[in-house]
Length: 241
Image (cartoon, rainbow, N blue to C red):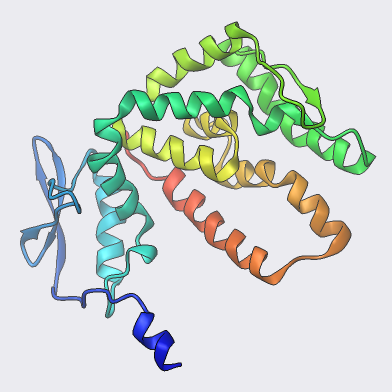
């Protein structure tokens, strides 16, 4: 027990009394006792919308004792957008495009029939939307063998992705992609075709089927609930006016 206490991460204590917002021509700042918050990279933490700033201010205001970043997902996402994504826009886009090239929605089970039906029910409408909305007609394969997607589908997806190149939006896009395993699902969320809750269900068709057959593992369920909260808060964060 003593070792566990010694190895426990040490976080700074809450040092401020009040949290407020300040608007400028460059966006909205979070003030702690009238002092502007900065990112870990020492950049000003400036948000493009009041709604996004209010979410982050609420996270800082909710701190009772230790400032633990794990309980501040929107703040972490904003820091990532400012310190990281803004400096690597093209690299982040390319990573998302790689996901699209081997997207979860395009790899289907052959059996059992119940799982096959659930995949069709939850995934086909999203693929149909991508085809009709942006002209990205992805192909479907059975099993796990890699399927090279048509160049036209990847080009159409890439072109649409460029509409979401703002660092804040792109950071959310990347988080949603990595948590769901699907760049197509992430695009549908960003473009408000799917809610975060619908996206989460679609991303876990296979896992939910296994749970229905074999039961739920406690640690896996705990991790899933944590990730679900992340995709809910981070992918719904309102970065655009």
